[in-house]
Length: 308
Ligand code: CP
Ligand code: NVA
Image 1: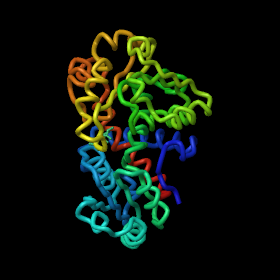
Image 2 (image 1 turned 90 degrees about the horizontal axis):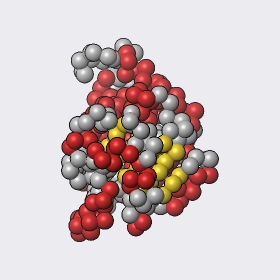
Image 3 (image 1 turned 90 degrees about the vertical axis):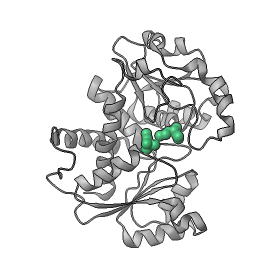
Image 4 (image 1 turned 135 degrees about the vertical axis):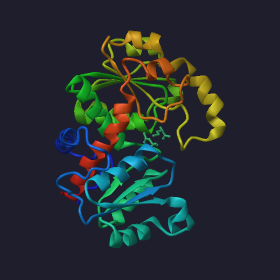
């Protein structure tokens, strides 16, 4: 059974297959109304549970639409409305859901919740974001990069700001897809050494450079994310803003990158905080292609999980 729990725990050949498959499926739907069923209906007779313990726009809608396009049925569940949020164990929830549905996607807080769900479910489980990682995002991001600029292998990606869950999955992606990554942000918000060391052990260059202008030099891709993630305490907001203000991606910073560099953001963006509107809406930005590609990439992930 194929769980999709993280980028680094998924075979690189399988990751490559999913990216290429996503591209083929996207091309096959070009110009069709969004509700048009896919020709082959690979999820016909399949039921998918989408569990959210945190807010979501992209993950929720893209998974739901993806299931429907592939002929399956989906249900979006709020963790707070389930017994899960009222003391029922994750293991028992996993066992029960496995009697009703063929696939579970969960967005949660602790990584341990995801891992326990996968351990006790008898159907595949997909990580829709935890406090530590966001692998579906990186699938869409690699797909988007390659759509615009060709193979990502050997390219220089620069992560700006907070070394958070999306940054961690980018580091996993560096190791599995073979690109170099420079992190630029305050020392206190650097990614966990475990993520850095794992990527380095796969032979890619991982650099921690506190000076954003230096970091971005020669970048093929510049990435930003919110300065305060959903799992961060709101009381840390002001301190984080003060620490991160110097890492805003603006036109001046983008000028340090290669002239044809791309800009990405997983969204939701806080315009004129981590990125200026001029960059978000400017010629380097591919943020809405990136959001669209969540749909196509996750369809490929679901098919890989189910073997259909
Ligand atoms: N990028 C992303 O996962 O967006 P949502 O939080 O809206 O799902
Ligand atoms: N780092 C952000 C990503 C949102 C998709 C968060 O966890 O809130």
